[in-house]
Image (cartoon, rainbow, N blue to C red; front, side, top):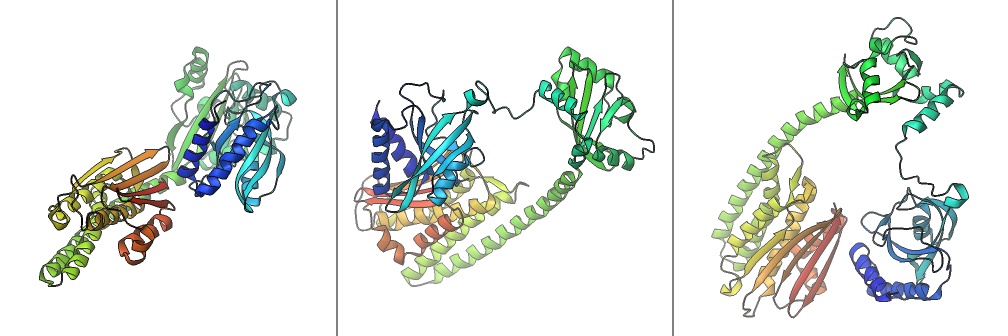
Length: 483
């Protein structure tokens, strides 16, 4: 077994998804190595999970399979998320530092398992958990698979048979209308919600015993449903939305060929449709607001530029121009939003505008040294507007910092600043780096308003993390957050 491979997993995942220190990660690697060689709990799958700082869920960093028995996992699970709804034990122990003994859980592959979880602590701080898993398949049913949450026709049939035994008042607590027709198309069972809807539709007689064709709210007939079910036409049984009277419904029809019966479930989505209509109206209003905000910001930019041209102090000019770039970074998002109805924007389009503005502003570079500004931005990243504005400001500040300070007092050949934005699953990473002289982040951030803005916005508004690696060969800023 290659232990180095596990060490690399732990380092990579912890650096990417946690705020554990280097010392804590090293300690965790040592614990993983002990577990791999110790063979404690030899007959079970053993895991180490840490807490994902972005999602609050647990994430697997190490997996040791049984030495003699087959593992209950067919696929690699290192790097996968362990959700609280499926595995309550690991997060409970991470939060309480208490053992969680024998809690039932559902594995990433859908098997019912029993977990015992122990805290892994470094200096009284729980940094991870050790999880021992036992497969319950043989205890309950061989290879019992709970991953398919959609009931099969056979399961639905069993439920219908039990409805004839169980007090039907149970279904009266369900808000959706439930209609069950026999092999002749006559309504045999319905719940309270169904009765109330049809009374609102004006039906004066009791609906029990009425034919499907007298109750259908769409254009389908019982014969069509039965024929489609017999011929195996799945399109007839897809969920569909219809409008009837003042209502909107989402209807699901199920045909059980073994019994010849039809089940129809009607969900009232009228409130949802009304909200969608209001949202469309509000989006038009918001679009106009973004247009006006953008125009007002452009007016402020013009005034600041005029003031900068009149200012005699170089320091005053510098501060005013920095303010101009900050406002333009905000205006870039409002410019895009004023041209669309959605509140989400393509991040690449926002950052491209900012990069173009800064390229023009720093055309000659600091001290006359030309600096090349390049970017690689994933065009598939879509963000809601508030996050886009925050990232625009942060990116603007960090690029400005590179231009203003990275090449100060040095003559750097092929000076460059690079912006790289990537997305992996739901996590976004922004890298801004230069090949300048470097600096001590803590010292500069105490006196630099721009860096203070970046730190405050990333941690406060994005709930993300920012890190800096600055050496004599250059500086690298990294921002990471969950989209």
